[in-house]
Image (cartoon, rainbow, N blue to C red; front, side, top):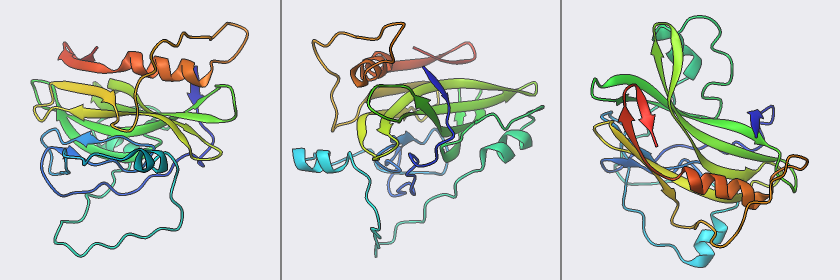
Length: 230
């Protein structure tokens, strides 16, 4: 359903807020909160309730807005370049195949062995009806014996690449011990009820089809053997 994207227009990435422990706040309307799994990158897990108008406005990108803060919060951690990180941690062969192409990469530790991993966004094209759409996934990458392995790969947002409108969004929380991850609808979104999938072999999926697939991916992922499993 998805393929590597040649479109950069859907990426609207911004800095992660770095204020209080455990959960990092969203990088933008397209991304998803990231839990700090034993790293120095911190953010807030307590998100205030939103009114319907706040939720609707959050589905569209904001252009030309500069936010200046005067508090004493530390600056956000610098974004990690995924190719350099993967090579530095032993990846062999080509690592240019779109790993972490959505940016917002941060190093975390996962599994009982506290294995070093890189968590990033990845952007994928989607052939849904109604224009160009992109699905953003959160991935957790590890390098083992020179091979890049995705220890987690889950969808977090479904965004129109032409308008920047976000049709659906999931929040990912990775436990501080790195042994579980929880994927749930963002507070401004809800999984549809009573809607059947319409996808057929001869036509692209509808927007509802993609949202239903994302809802099916929600839930708890626990570390088992060598990766997070649903």
